[in-house]
Length: 467
Image (cartoon, one colour):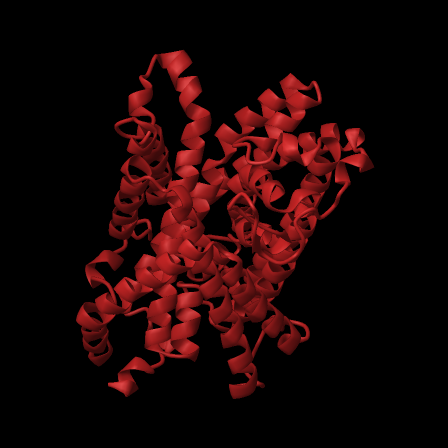
């Protein structure tokens, strides 16, 4: 039994007749990464972060960005060594073993499902007023039960639209994604151009009113720079979706490293610029916990047209986040099904080389979450799943540096032991900076995952390996 739990995957034989079509180049990958990273995080979480850290939310963005950058370098090295679909799940399967790979894959399923559903609900929040004023659509059909409605139809509709794009073709959907990413970046550039001239150093005082480490405030809210960083971390991940595209990349040795590192560098720069402009333009207390902090700041500055432009751009461009994570979710499902850990029939490809069944199955799962299930604080579970995956990838990089130091690597992370250890310790620290309830629910999710593995998936994986 222990041998099967530690059985490592041989990457050369993983295809078994289910090979994805190579249609993507590095501009598509950079756009995919930026599309996933720049989204609801910077548009909404800066308000949550400011409530927890005050003006030091700038430092929270920097801390989360440094940890993610270290993890991104580890991803880039592993992606060029193992250019196969599946991201952290596949790397763990090849380097560590099946049981750890299952836990990582199960965590990624949690992460991607919650992100897709949460962003769809967030998009619906922007779109619902427009639908009500233009089409007279009742709010009961645009809000989930947690808000007193029946079903969130706009959220389900945007998920169906993105699923249709992915079914039509990976390259075509990636091209549309690249165009929408430009719309989103332009909107953030307008925000910085309008808000930065209003910068007032007085708005930064006191800079860190709640200290650095996470602690419980007198009002029962967990605060501190690291408490904010643990939530803001949501705003940075997304580059891991690039790694899931390895089998669909024309030149993975070159394109994967450009896509992963390039998107992270671009997004760290964008986030720091937006955060500095935001907290410098308006006192943080005026936009803390706002569902639309950037638009609110522009209105506070007497720029309603710019605020309106930003809101419309969010409605147009937020589907890029849904597309990127939906893509990654479907590819994780696809790879686990191809390995026998999930029903292998789900890995069937269409004539255009896209995994039709798994895309439809993924759409159904995330549509139910977005349309009916109240997410609330459970959205923080997405962070927990990501932190687990990032830790595993960093560990895989260090193991391979010892196990196969001379193996071909078209990208080598600089100072690997520093990068890897910072990424792992940083992720562990951020995990324990998450709310306690989130930590508990993450353990419950993985306990359920282990039950599924031992009762179902392990036997199927053994049978698949024997064929």
